[in-house]
Length: 101
Image (tube, rainbow, N blue to C red; front, side):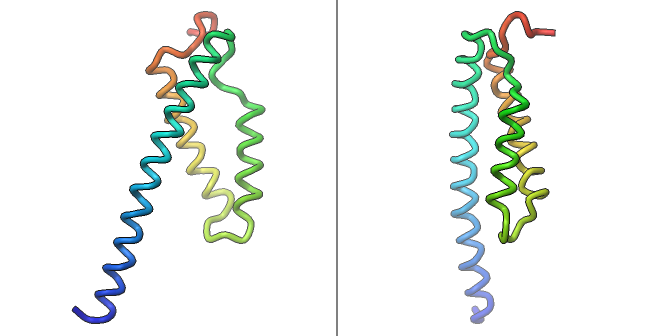
């Protein structure tokens, strides 16, 4: 193998390790979202909290300054993450009775 091929293999191994961590963190986040959904159900609160979502997005903008991804790209990822976590909450029947459509 050439030096370039070895370096590429090393970089790919690093990406694989990060991917493993990302999946583990996404699953942990989903579990926390389900736990929050259960708490919200007991409190008879809606699963969606638009103020909290705005707070998260403002924090993401701050964290994205000077990084490799724009804050728009990071927020696009998080829109997907939040939608998937909401779906996980709904699958666990976390929605309060009064907010079912």
